[in-house]
Image (cartoon, rainbow, N blue to C red; front, side, top):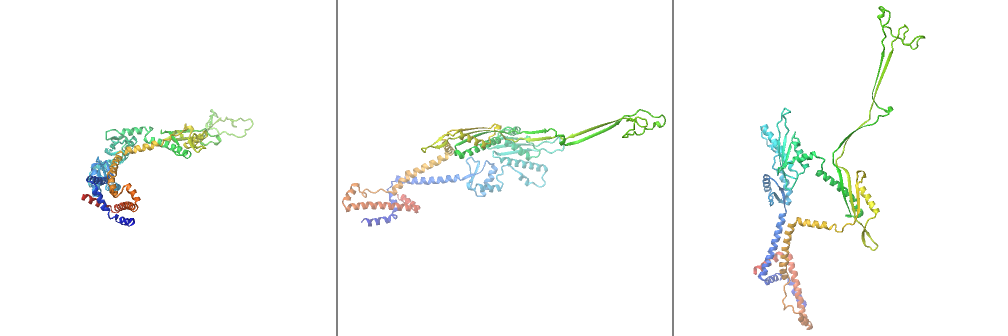
Amino acid sequence: MATPGTQSTTNPASENLAERIRQVLARLSGQQKIVLMVAIAGVIALLVASSTWLKQADYRILFSNISERDGGSIIAALEQMNVPYRFSDSGSAILVPGGKVHEVRLRLASQGLPKGGAVGFELMENQKFGISQFAEQVNYQRSIEGELARTIQALSAVESARVHLAIPKNSVFLREQQKPTASVVLNLNSGRLIDPTQIHGIMNLVASAVPGLPPRNITIVDQEGNMLSTMGELNQQNQNGLDQRQLNYVKEIEQTYIKRIETILEPIFGKGNARAEVTAELDFSQREQTSENYTPNSPPNAAAIRSQQMHESTEREPLGPGGVPGALSNQPPNAAAAPITLPAGTQAGVSTTGQATPDKSTKKDSTVNYEVDRTIQHVKMPVGMIKRVSAAVVVNYKKKVDNNGESKFVPLTQQELGQINNLVREAMGYNPARGDTLNVVNAAFADNTARPALEQRAIDFITENIFDIAKWGLLLLVLLYLIFGIIRPIVREVINPPVPEEEYPDGPAIEGGEGEGEEGDEVVDEVEMQRREYAANLEAAREIIRNDPRMAAQIIKEWISDE
């Protein structure tokens, strides 16, 4: 009897699912139905709200902090391109869908938007024929001012800028010529500052764009009227002082030394078991040195002669008056003869004619100029030379396994410390001549060094996103309450309906039936059939919900309308 009954009750389970759902809803009270409807509506509302929030988050900033003229032009262009847009809460930014930000920016750039509120050289394109020279000069000056303002606005710290130029007329008289002047007004972004180096760069930028404009004739002020050009002049005068770039350079040098030391020690002790700190002292002074060296003269045999002068002169002493009175005595005497050999009985300087010859004196001068060795050196010392380096290295204890298989940390030996010291010296380029110092210490590291970092990152993340976390947390709590507090009990009652007491005999009846033979078997078979029927109905309901959820929703709607 059990076998035929089982076959007859398992087949029509899927067909009676809708009727069973109607019966379960009919057993619900009116208050339970209202609660079920409210819960379903709340879930739907939460899903719609979450989807709406996701769509709102998809909007990104297209442009921010733009002028009203550019904002109106951009909105008109967006309406022509059929691109949806929104405004931020403060109204200072235009938002568009995130997937179209880059495309819209490129399309607006092709139209020359945003213009930045300044008019550049496009003003010269609409020149009328027959314009006066004065008007042409004014348009040219306006064009230069607009282009300079656009260029200055490209800086990250500058929100907007205005440039005013005062260009005097050229004069043919040199004494009456005047240098141009310029005034720049900067509107900085909120919370942003500009350093003296950037101010000096703006001054040189404006001076290079206007012919004959010296940087000292440029005045720069911010939106609060603070004089900024004086900061640039002081920075130019005090070039030996450390600015931000020099500080960054010092930090970069120190980080390079630290990376070298940790890189050489990491393969030996592992990652995180060696820490290094380096302090570098750099010289940023600008120095130029010129030296002229003279070496001793070379030996005479190898000397180089620049010039040589020789002078020789011969003088004769004049003779006194003499000779035979008469006409012949007025004739000059004959030239004195100087024979190689003189006859016997004659004296030098006495002629054979009996007249005395005059004495001769010879003078010779010689001047020799030698080349002198000379070396001239002009040396410009580089800026940012390393004067001194100090390094401190701490190394963790070495991990060692004892005979029992237990690992423990032991300090390093003196030999190992010496090896580590030599490695660090070579890695950092230790130079005792410049006063470098190095200190290597072996100590045990704390076990909780990595935990505070993770906890700090978690705290920072929660602090930065506290409002988003609270919003989604509240939404999740409400959704979980509706699902597990209201919908789940009702669905459980629908899936697992209560069985009437008469269908389930109590324990003694079943036990007594077992002793009665055929009657007890029939009771057990009835219980087993009901269990199988319940399992089949449950599986059929799940299958219908999976295959056709719209049908299940329609059945629930009909039950609610019948009630």
